[in-house]
Image (cartoon, rainbow, N blue to C red; front, top):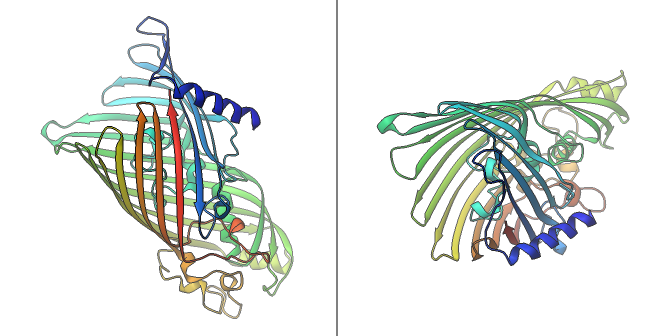
Amino acid sequence: MKSLKGLMLGLGMLCMGLPAMAVEFGDDLYGGVTVHGFVSQGYLLSDNNNFFAKTEDGSARFNEFGVNISSQVSDNLRVGLQIFARNLGEFGEGEPEIDWGFADYRWRDWMGIRVGKMKMVHGLYNTTRDIDMLRNSIFLPQSVYNEAWRDTVSAISGAEIYGDLYMGNAGTLSYQFQGGETEFAVDGGVVTSLTDQSRLAGVLSDPQSTHTKYSMAGGLVWYTPINGLRLSTTVWSVEFDMETNAVAEDFLPDSGSANVKANTVSRAYTASLEYLRGPFTFAAEYMGNRYEFTNQAEGHSDFANFINAAGTRTLNTEGYYAAMAYRFTDWLELGISYSEYYADKDDRSGKLNTIDEHPRFPGLSNPRKDTGYKDHDAWLKDIGMTARFDLTPNWVFKLEGHAMNGAAILMKDINSDKNNNLNTSENWFLFAAKMTVSF
């Protein structure tokens, strides 16, 4: 960890004195190697609630580092790889990993194939999410690009077919179809979120291992005849199993523990629009996600029978946003966004968090209410404003503020009181600053 921080600091100091550049090795058209990279450091501060890190006290555990190498082997074949490390609170821990690495064979304009680890298709910006220099904001809207899911939907290991279909006066249609596996780390954001979900049923979960069953993704982008306008739709589906030790909360009638195999299926779709005109950018996206949770407990104890009796539970989430940015000068760009997210599309008001009786098992108390959930934990509404300063062609500084209402996406383990009950505020503010250097 210390060596990585030292490397980031050294590269950052070096790059601040260099013009924007790529390092190239080899003079031949083919076989030469190109190296790019970036280093960023940020700071987060919130007045209430902790945003993926202990931001109420201020947190500098917010940084990214990446180096990529690529080579055009022939007219049709290109290979590349990127090493990436990030830290956002407890996520990432600054550990370097292969972010992407693949061989790309472009047979025709209308069809190519990639094999390896590729950026996963999701919305307009997931494939370029790591490149801070390409966008106005520090954080992409959390209604569509939830930081808790970032590590999982960042990349897919397998194969991809892609291409561009030229349609004359109707524009161009680009497509991507991917299949393979994604990663679900035991200490990652997705598993942490699912552990929080189990508390809604009155079960404390201690994940031990995960296994991906399949991952698929696909997308269509229509570059319309209207200059600067593109429309997109993407879908993805993933399924994985998690082995966990489950313990009953005190308010359940049957105390005890059990080994549980928890199966999760997630199917998401996103509809997107982007319009670019000179210094002006507008984007809007809508995302829906359907989850299916099936838990199978070992043994025949009362607690195991309680878990198995629950069967398959479904959950539908929903999120959408609109964002604008305008570049006033070569060095100043301002942006604004509005985003809404609902953790349960069928309970937007959060009523199920506050009723006395268990929403699925009449006669039992409501574990959501008993563990501190409030109505505002069902949604997150966010007004964001960003100021981007391009200090040099390869050195960018950003300031960002978010006026938040609700607490739907927040991690429960860092937003609970001493009794392990959720303790969030409905209205809160998040400040973010970030410096990025590219080379």
